[in-house]
Length: 304
Image (tube, rainbow, N blue to C red):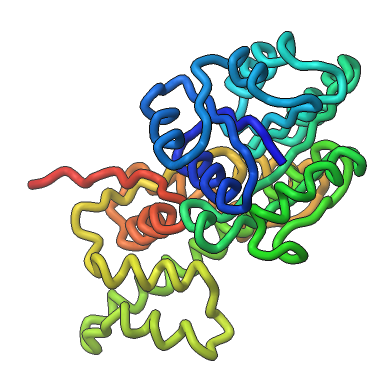
C-alpha cells in the first residue's frame, strides 16, 4: 500500500521508516527540506510541495498528517484538498482536540473525502516497539487503512483498534494522556521522597530496577524513568520546567463538563503549571521522563 506523509518530525519520520520496512511505498513532505532529505536517504520518496505529494500518489490516495494541533492541521487540509479526489482519505495522527476533528470530518465528508483520526502513542520508541493507535472514523475507511495500521502497530492484532466514529480516536488519546500525567506525577513524587531520605543514601536507579520486575507499580514509564536515573541521577542541568501540550487541559475540561471527578489528573496538570516557578527534583524527573518516551526537549537549567 502507498501513502503520503505530511510532517516529518522525529515521530513522523520514524513512522515512515516503519512503514517502509513493512513494504509500503511512502511519499514524504515537510516544510523543512532537510527533513524530506532525511527520509529520502532512508529510502522514501520526497515531495517539494503538497501538490507534488498528491500528484505522486495513486488514486484513491491516503495522506497521513503529522503536524501540530490547531491551525497547522486546518492549513494543511486546506492546501491539500484542491489536489485530491473524491474517495481519498485524510488521516490526522497528531494530538488534535476531538471537537476540531469532528468539525473537520463533517466538512470533509461534504466534499467527498474520508477523515480518520488516529490518536498515536509510542513516541520515539515506536519505530522499534510499534505504535499504540486509537482510531476514529467510518468503518469502511478504517478497514481500507488496515494494512498501514497493522504495520505500524506492535502486532497486527494488538495495540490498535477502531474505537468509534470521527473524533473518538483523539478523544481516547486525550484521556490516555491525562492518565499519563497522573502516573508520571506519582512516580516523580515518590522518587523525590526517596531522594530526600538522606540517612539511607538510596540509589534511585537501583530502586527503579528492583521495581521493574514483579512489582505492582512496574510499567513502561518506570522502565524509562530507570534509564533517565541511570544517565543522570541528580538531574544535573535539567530545569524543573514541565511543559504540557494540551491534552491534560482538555481532559480536565472534559471531566468538568461531564461532572466526573478527576482529582489526580487535575492536580498533576496544576503541578506542571507550578513547575514553571520552582526548583523541584520531582519536576526535573517529570521533564526527564517526557524526554525519554517522547523525545520532548529538556529545558536546560541555568549554570551558576
